[in-house]
Image 1 (cartoon, helix red, strand yellow):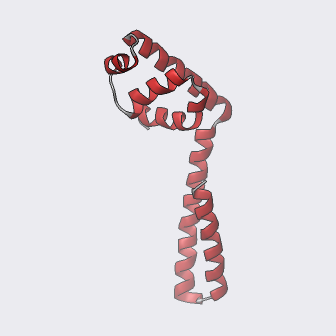
Image 2 (cartoon, rainbow, N blue to C red; image 1 turned 30 degrees about the vertical axis):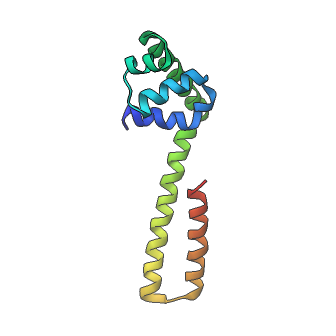
Image 3 (cartoon, rainbow, N blue to C red; image 1 turned 180 degrees about the vertical axis):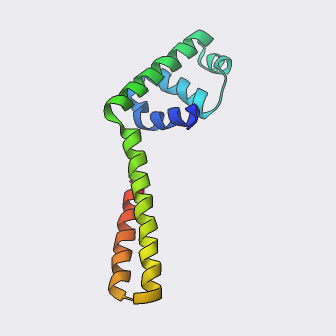
Amino acid sequence: MSKNLEVSNLLDFYGGLLTDKQRETVEYYYNDDLSLGEIAENLGISRQGVRDSIKRAETVMIDMEEKLGLVKKTRELRRSLDTIRHNIDIIDERNMKVYRSNAINESIKVILKELDRLSNE
């Protein structure tokens, strides 16, 4: 995964733990793709100040991820949900071709509804 995407994911989970200035500099740098000079001009601080703010913010977010693992757990949950959805598709296809069971169809609908709910949380 690219560093930009990794930091954006960390920002989604841990951005609220940063100071307003840190969050703003990280968003400008990673999400808006502004240069250190552009950010410095926007915020009225030095390029070194921008760089320091970004590095401190990255350290805070990486430390929190190491302690809490929310990004990792979310990725694992999404992979599990995708695996469940794939297997439900296989069961549905088999049911349509072989069993044609209304009970299985209804169970599939319930499972898919729960998967959608979990996917959107």
